[in-house]
Image 1 (cartoon, rainbow over the protein chains, first blue to last red):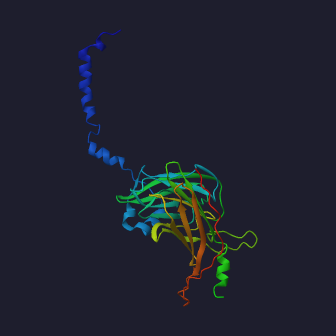
Image 2: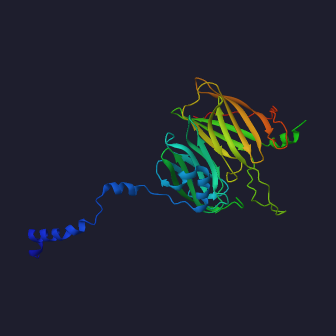
Length: 158
Length: 160
């Protein structure tokens, strides 16, 4: 045992050396909150449809966990893929589904009027393995969820 | 009879509704519209010609004249589109639910169902295809609601 390395003096010196390192940790918590608002990156063909549907709102899509897209991870038959949109109705005004690699990405849009409720579900065609996007319009703006669906047998000419 | 051909085309349109009642009183409505939903991008295997597009564009669900759901579909939705939906307040008394849809060929079909729940929770309804009409404003034809009782819906079962 080396007695020198365990002295209190030695510890204080080492702690003093660590002080400059502390300044590099981001202590600004307001900035840290802003960092949690992740922006969902959307492919160009979906962005074009979104701009047509929502106009200027489509510029910013925040990724969220308040709404859920229930879909199988591996779909045996690409022509029938069951999808369910879950979430809080008071939060969601309308929900749209997009399949990235289909010739026309916009699949369906549910406009929820007063008195209607979530979940809603339907069955969609997915031509090949691709991402399925659920974009929901809320009072705060657009929010989105991404889900990858692997297709073993596609359907020709979706 | 005018519009007879269009009626034959629409004979294939059929509609099924089933209500599933859960233990906590929630109702889930599951519906199937019989429709080919051709995208227009698929080829015939023998002739290699494109099969013309034929898909539903818009579905509206109203209860007692009040619009609840407005669903935009497209060719990307599977054949015989299945739509499950819920209402925030369950239907208790007798209500008239009306489901109508538009084709990309500007055909409108609508179904009227009378949804009824007894106090014991027994669900019964009868429905019929109320009217099939073809909008032909461009050619100058007047749109008239021809009442065509085509087929009765299958009786629904209640699942507890």
